[in-house]
Image (cartoon, rainbow, N blue to C red; front, side, top):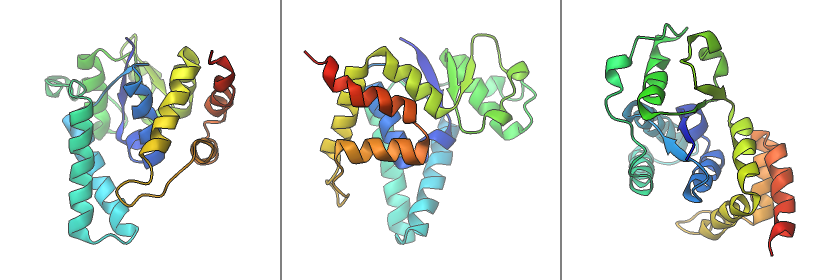
Length: 197
């Protein structure tokens, strides 16, 4: 199964994170990350929730819960032993070294990130692509459009719980296209229903 490292920048936006992880739950790829990525995600998620009006203590609790749920749902995703490679790649931002280190140790074929400029191709080990989330999602959806649509239906089914707004499949698809530039994936997903027997 194809392995992809998901950088903090693609895990922080909630609907994008939910979509990418729901594709993984359908066994379309194996997600990996490092403890450093999860720590960044927890910190950014807490700040985001506070900016949306959540009290600090509650925001921190919800951010911790998110990371705990990711660890529970994907219990083999957290790469161990990447620290020894940190500093080996000469990236423009040394703070990104942990991303490549975890990708190498985890056997990733891709690093999925919004910050592609921070991962120049000449600094990335052979066999690892650096992909934007929209490109990665499209490649993944093409593998099995029906399973990918099922992933979106699961997101819709989970919505409305825990005080969240209920969202239809169509609303989720519109958000993926409008907010995350996943128009190509959405085009495939809109036709996936026809492929069902």
